[in-house]
Image: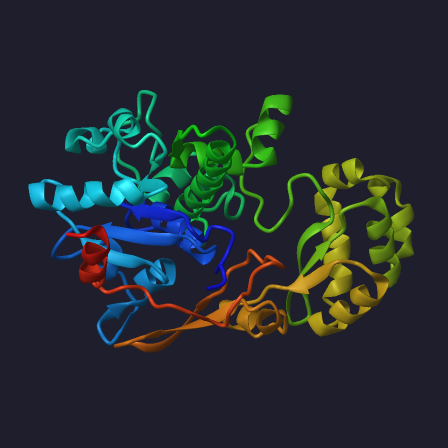
Length: 383
């Protein structure tokens, strides 16, 4: 059988739940790995209780657990521990997102597992990592968005705190965990040595602050929310038109000059207040007023055509439905289908990682029911 992806042949034992860890293992499954999800008996992953629901099944859970297998194990039960340990004998990677110390209490900390299974890569995603004074503290996505500074630069100036509109704390940690695991797999391939991957959601939020940390360390000024405006590039924000907002993004002086010409305001290109990006940044309010005055004279579609012909990057602010209607979506296979035995066909986000050596099918296997693969897994293990 042809390999499904570059991680075909890799087996992942997935103890994680809700979002950060499952997002990591979801991506690994998309890239061909076999992911065996270990869930608590009875209720399973907490995400199974998150809506919206179709035929009583969580589509939230489906979206990040498709293509995995499920077996319910109680790791405090001797019989289930034997099954778990038999799985570890065959696994390449274990992923967990418990609070630090939990795996040690169960007898499955990194040191113990590394001694017993020297080729097993151990990946842990937690709120604050396995070291430091906050290591044992609990954390959810919004907690680390707040602690990590992300919410302080999100929203309108002077407005109430605003959560980033998706779970950037969890998704960021999931992405970094996958990167760490794949680096560890490459290291093992080269040296034979397995390693521990220790990812903290808090660390990831700091890393994702991009230029905000640099702006603070260099200038001493604490960055704040700027609405739709870029903190370092001008004009690079959303402007009002006659019928809605339009994003205009001039990443250099040449694009700024093209925008001024296309808008019928060549005087703005020659204005000494706006000659360079640094000057435009300092005089942003004055420049915004000039652009807004012109752009309000015509509808958004007019300006998209005008700026498009001039080669100036611009675009509307779509809602989710409009984003999915973009002609790029089917061409890039970014809306796929999975068929669940009970819920039927569900459309979900596709995989943005496109690899020329592997197919990107339009359908995917469904997410497993709780404990759905027990019989098959036990047979494979000779149990």
